[in-house]
Image (cartoon, rainbow, N blue to C red; front, side, top):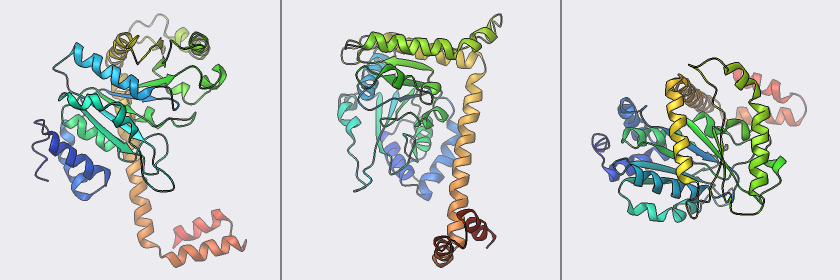
Length: 321
């Protein structure tokens, strides 16, 4: 707990220790975040999601380099989430390997995290870790999810701005345009746009957006104070930095739009509401487990196996007890 007061002053070692406590969900980690919570709420959280192989890590690397050149006094944090093996429980933190050159920049803090079995593309403690980085003065904070599928959209409840990254050659245009992950995008990025099929993918995404946001455009016409945000589709080549300055510019424009139209506060409220509800469910589940014996649960399962109770009836019985 001695590291709490030094974190807002930029002590990276103290911050790293606190993040470890938060990842392990220790009482000291929770206590530290309680005390530092007053210093949060300033950072722009930018989420990047998309299928494996689309180049998210390389894009983050290029984006951070560009932002640091443009604003050398700005401290930037990166949270890179990697999947955990369901067999060994281990994780290869490949994002840290791809971003190793960022480690030489004292103005950048990279934290790799394993999902530890959590679904949705994020780790259980990603929200808490982002809060700690916010309290430490990092802004923006880039959060890269694991290779996400069409329904792994949890990042939208965490980030203020969500980038959905696609790339040619990972499936047809229809697959890339399916509902779910497309609907959470504030910005769509066609990375590896120097490869064959990139133009077709970009056109397909633009066509889907044109249909999906037609009503919003119509409703916002004439409302100068609350224009609709239509997700732009940008082309990038992360390896050589092509399109990255334009992407950084659009991210800044979206942050400005959020604050000018009251959306920032709405998303902040939704983000904190989702986190409180998640913590509440976990706390109730843990308390319930503490009050139930394994034998009670096993007896209920046996009755379900014998078809004496349905699963719904078994849950009702356990809750009544």
